[in-house]
Amino acid sequence: MTVNNNNITSGVSHVAITVLDLNATVSFFVDVLGYDKVGEDPGYPAAFVSDGSTMLALWQAKDPANAVPFDRFNVIGLHHLAINVEDAQLDALHATLEKLEDCDIEFAPELAYGGPSRHFMANIPGSGIRFEFRTNG
Image (cartoon, rainbow, N blue to C red; front, side):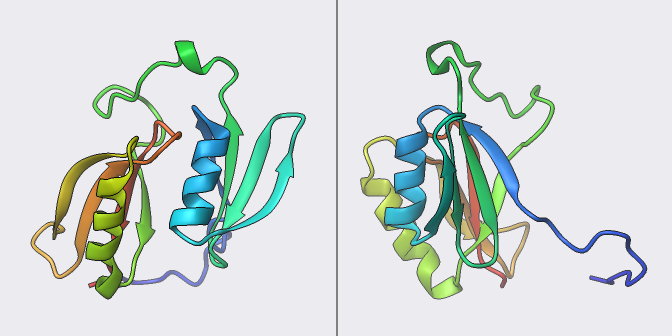
């Protein structure tokens, strides 16, 4: 990848995601992935989690019962969020997610577009959002 050093921007500050169940989503990031909860706004409500590199702002949907389910072929906006995972931890993370009651795994770890990176996709608990867990290969 060629990097243009003349860019006006310098990376992503954070990614903000509206989720179906704020507590379940925060719990997943903190308890399963080891993120830190770095802030919250109970009035919104929202919570902020970080792995030390990336911060996610998680916003509670106002009416989750009537939220429109994700359709990756027709929704404009976030298709999925890809999170880097060390290669040695990808299979273990997949096994952990398989045991979660409300985690929908789209496919098991496989080569990403011929490799060398590997990845899998999952709709993580409480979020309603597709996440890709991917190695750097």
